[in-house]
Structure formats: structure tokens, C-alpha cells
Length: 193
Image (cartoon, rainbow, N blue to C red; front, side, top):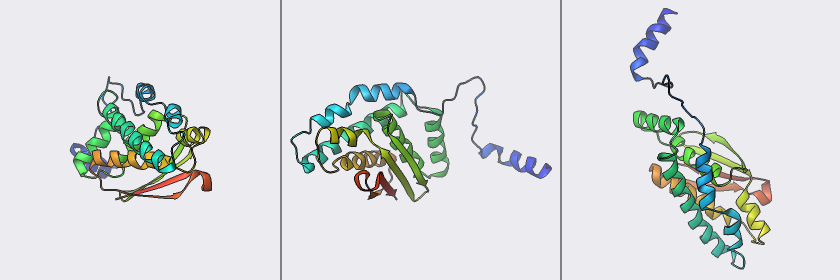
């Protein structure tokens, strides 16, 4: 028992403080971020604007949209809606030099939550080499189907948004998509460094 206490005392200077007495510490996304992102971007309107375009044109348009949504998400998440999770992720990065997967993952999660708060998604694996994201209900895919857009051009949206996040974090990533909603009931993205 004494050894644990001494060990803890020795390491105390190197440990991060997780509490600040008297200060509310939010570890979840602020609803204001969702409101601002959804006010600026409308998934349904974006899908309708693609009617009559082929899959390649739709893919390119959705790539641009993905970049814009991620850039806005990053801006809001790092300024107006910076939460305790964001602070901690950045503190850990500064202390350890380890960026992936936490910094990129934070932006990816906030981007999904910000634009598509009703989507069902899961991070199934997060290591310092790989981040695996599974999306089993996607508002973008649904809006495209409802607008008669064929194929999976929304892959462009997701991949471009991940790349925009990686640009911000400085992570060199590669993205694979071994599963898709139409064939497997989920899109699965394997993002690795």
C-alpha cells in the first residue's frame, strides 16, 4: 500500500489532472456544434442537387462537401465548442507525440455527430496503427437513395472528410472500405497510418 502511494506521488508531476474544482468539464459534444453544422449544410438538399448527375460527378461533388463539412467541424471543435475531450487529446499529443488515432478520431466522430446526429456508427477498433469505423445507418446514403442517385458516391464524402481531418492532424493515412451498406449492411472504413 505504501509503495503504491509513493509510486503515485513520484509520478504525480507527470500525470494529467482530470478535474478542475469549480469548473464544469464537458466530455461530450456541444449541441451548438450540431446546430451550426446542420444549419450550414443540408444533406437532403445536397442529395437533390445531384439528381441527373452520374456517379462520378456525384462522387466529386460529395468529396467537396465532405472537405467543407470537416473543415467547419474542426474550426468549431477547436474554438467555440472546444470540450474537455479535445483539451485532453491535445494535451496527450503534446506530451507523448502520439496523434493517431485519437486526434483524427475526435474530428471524425464530431463530424458525423455534427452533420448526421441520427446516424448509427461505431468505432470498432482504435490502435496507434488503425482506426476502424462502421456506419450502419447513414443519412447521406439514405438521402441519395431517396433522390434516385445510384451507386455509392457518398464514399467520396467520407474519404474526403477523413483526409481533411488527417491534413489537420498531420497524420498520413490510407483508407480502405472492405464493407458497404448495400452489400454488408454497413460501411466499414479501415483508416491506417
